[in-house]
Image: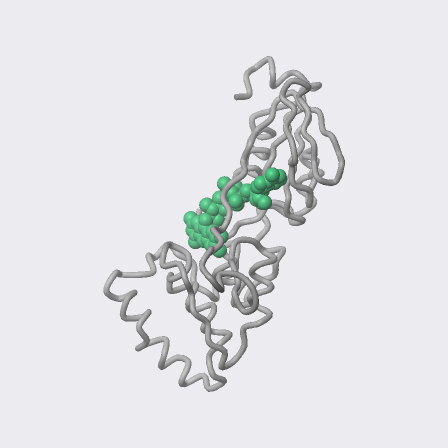
Length: 222
Ligand SMILES: Cc1cc2nc3c(=O)[nH]c(=O)nc-3n(C[C@H](O)[C@H](O)[C@H](O)COP(=O)(O)OP(=O)(O)OC[C@H]3O[C@@H](n4cnc5c(N)ncnc54)[C@H](O)[C@@H]3O)c2cc1C
């Protein structure tokens, strides 16, 4: 994407829409590749680019701080000359005018536009699928909201038996908050509960997976 002429052109403005993992790494890669133009990262979330795996593990368990999920320390972006425009979803792309319109009223011109919009959690349309005591887990704010209502003795049902929901680290993170106060009962459940049997049968978690107690940034999801 960054040909020689583009790389030398310091007047060229690349706007990256979607300040998630892909967007953040793309911005970083542009600089690493020597792109001399302007780079702007635009995202609907208020957080700088971050990694989502800890959201169902360490951050949910409360064993790491929000900032530890960030792809880069906050100061990196300014140092690398990457402008962040956060907390404002895009409303419209005017391709003829090469302009992006955001919900906060800002209109951003661009020379090249990169879309790294990722995915979103599918909301259940069944009766009761939203509302009181129903939580979705996709972003940091979702995670903190969920963490805020979990507590000793609380019961949590996870709907969504894909990769994220039923993984033992995710269950362990939730269980570490909901477990009864007695540590012996907690460890007994961890050793004999259904998820431990499930994990043993499948040799799960794989060795490269992070455990709920590992520091966010040493995890192995990369
Ligand atoms: C709870 C959880 C746990 C996970 N655990 C693992 C794991 O252990 N291992 C693993 O490999 N993967 C895991 N994943 C998946 C992994 O996080 C995703 O594959 C990754 O986030 C994809 O990155 P992305 O940048 O493509 O998209 P996203 O992370 O979705 O980023 C896209 C960004 O674009 C923004 N955006 C969307 N529309 C607009 C708009 N109109 N205007 C402005 N901004 C917009 C979004 O708000 C978002 O911030 C997990 C995901 C979740 C939710």
